Amino acid sequence: MKKVKKTILVTMIIAAVSLTACINRTVPGRDNSKKTKGTVNAVKTEEPKDDTLRFSVLGDVHGNAGKLDKAIKDLYSINDNMDAMILNGDNVDEGLEKQYDAVQGILNKDSKLLPKTIIKNIGNHDYFDYAKGQNSQKDVEHFINLYLNFSGEKSVYHDTWIKNYHFISLGSESGNTKELGAVNATLSDKQLDWLKEKLAEKQEKGKPIFVFLHQHLSTSIKGWNGVVQKDKLTKILSQYPEVVLFTSHTHVLLSIDNVKLKQPFTTVHTGAVHYGIEPNGYKIKRLYDESQGLYVEVKNNKVTIKGRDFAKKSWVFSKDIN
Image 1 (cartoon, one colour):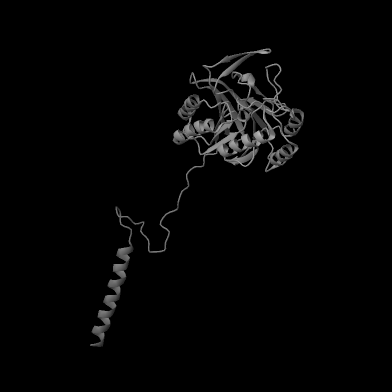
Image 2: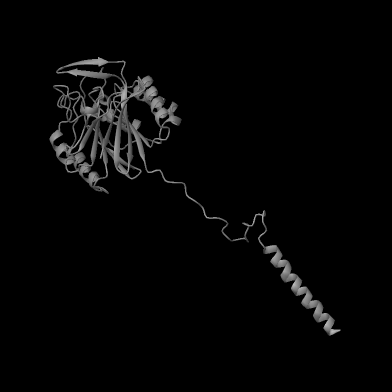
């Protein structure tokens, strides 16, 4: 009797072992990836990282909502995945709340066509109210506050990082006063010291630093000064050949000659959205059918700048900066 019980027990153990082996056996055609609870099923794969930086620079919109709308749509047709758009001053023709509202209205309407980052810089027309004449200090503060509300910034000069590239915006701290004149930019020593610190921040040799200022350092239009502290600013920027300085203000039509290399830094004129200008000495010809701006790509620190004619939906030039 004991032998019979022992035989039955052995048989049951063998059967249990065989059944377990059968269950765990890999069967062709069956999903064998399922594991017990607590076991990682698969290794997650990351999407390939896009290191190319893409942005546009638009100067001198002057509150022209229609042309801004066309420029945004044209840029979206070129690239629907840009990282930033920079409005480089003279966003409005006068620093009036209703004009800022009109420009912001277009940005809101076209929000799905725009990159998440929009940098808004100050220009000389953002200090204008034609009904007032020249500004007092109180007027200057009023116009700055309107700009700050529009831009979301805390100062007329500010900076940000995009895809590990530094974007530094400078801005005139006054405008349209008896002392300064109507159009020139004035940069305080405090702003220039701030610029020195920002240029040195995480600086890498050969890595471009993008600097923006509405007013120019030099122009083909005779009699236009641009920046009161031009010499000081040029000296600071000259310590960094990686700087690419974008300026607007003159409305001069785009050409490849607007990109000037090795000064020792690079300067780039942005063209104008509202209208273009053909200079001839002290005379200028305004071309209201024109609307222009820039499209920029950066890959492995190589910068390609393209001039765009939004009215004709065509390229004006393409220039590489090594």
